[in-house]
Structure formats: C-alpha cells, structure tokens
Image 1 (cartoon, rainbow, N blue to C red):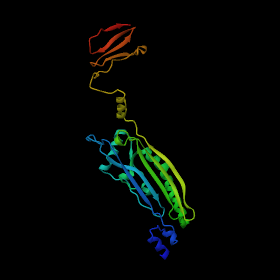
Image 2: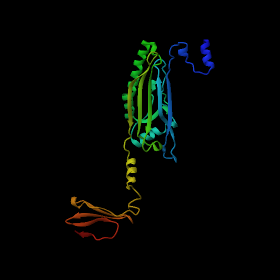
Image 3: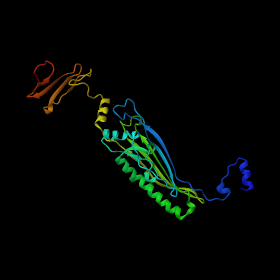
Image 4: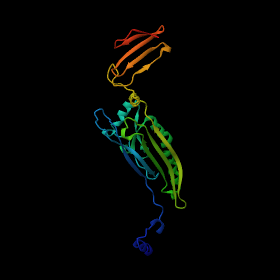
Length: 282
C-alpha cells in the first residue's frame, strides 16, 4: 500500500482496493440462499396435532457461469411423510419440487423442495427452468469471449406461497412466483439487467370426495347417525309431482319420515316408520 492508502485506512474511511490499486473486478462466485417454512397437517391418522414439516419458502440464487455448483435429487425419510399422504388424499402425483433445479445447483433437501403436482412441476420446467438454463449457457459464452464481463451472473428467485399452510393436507393449493434476469457486470458501464422470465406456477389439487363433504357440511349438509335424521332441523319437503316422482316428507325432530308416490291424481303412502293414512286425495 502507498502512504495515501495507509492514511485513508487509519482514518477509518472505506477503501475500495479495486479502485485504489487498479485491480480487475473480482469474480462474484455462485451463491444460493434457501429460506424454509413449515407446512402443518395431520399427516397420519394417528396424529393428534398438526405436525409441522419443513418445505422451501424462498430461494435466491446468483449463478455465476464460471463457478458452477452441483445439486442433488430429493432424499427419503420422515421429513417427507406428507407426500404419499397428499397423493392418497387428492388422487394426484405430488412431486418434491426443486425450487432451484438440481441441474442448476439446487439440493434435494426440504428447504429447497416444495410439494407441487406433477403438472405444476412440468410447468415450472417448461415455463421457467429451461429459460434459466439457456440464459446461463448464453452468459457463459459471453463471459468467455469477454473477460471484462467477469462477475456477470443469473439472478434467480422462487417464492412458494401456500393458500393454507396451517392445514396443508386439507388445502395444498399453492403458487411458485418465479423471476430471473441476467446481470451483466462491466467496469465501463456497471451492472446492466436483462430480463429472462417472470412467471407464476400454479399447483392446484384435485377435488377429493372428503373436501366436497367438508364444504357441504359448512352449508348445513352432512351425514349423522344411521337410518333416521338426527337433531332438530326444520321439516323439509320436496314436491316433484309434476314429474310423477316420489314425494318425501321428513320430520327432523324425531327422525321419522314418510315417502309418498303420486298416482292417478292422489298420493299413496309407499314407505313410512309411523302410522299414517294410506292415501290422501288431491
């Protein structure tokens, strides 16, 4: 260091070695940051509480073509217990979806994985990941042709947003918000950003029978007891005499019912669990 540089350091002023000593721009090097979240649900029938399981929340990668890193495929174990249960409940194929693709350096660990349908996984590959891979290869050629571009990289983020993370087994619908851009670093012009892709991957579950039942119960429908209606709901009647069908009368208070058939301009009792006249004239 010269005397001037030493004096600046002693005074506490910041020193940029690249400018003070006219050094070349330092290489960025690839960096990957994974932020995790917990998804809750009664993953097994024996579960008494909503056992949290780790999944990816956000991934941010700065991919330097001159500093490649290796990724990996997902593992197996108790930390992935939700996947087969999601498949069974929703009659779907749920994938341990990489937030950062393994071929781009993404690890197969829970913090870099999020449960998405197989259709969503294909959408992520087609609409996002292929573009990122192509951009990284193109950037590699540019940097090798012009070493002054050292430090240029692909900036890529993926954020997973679940509609119901506190009961993911009941509602596993989610979105992956993806954004990628090239950051071209040049001593002459500074950083120049070139967009690659911005896309939202939607992972939508099927419609399991259980979910339909749960939604109907919120409206007041449902199955309770055996044989007769239980509870004290109001009397309900359905009149479809115009089509010559069966006319039902249910007495909810005690669970009894009558079933009538409309024939020859009169109602005939077809079935009942209480004493009533056999016919009623119109």
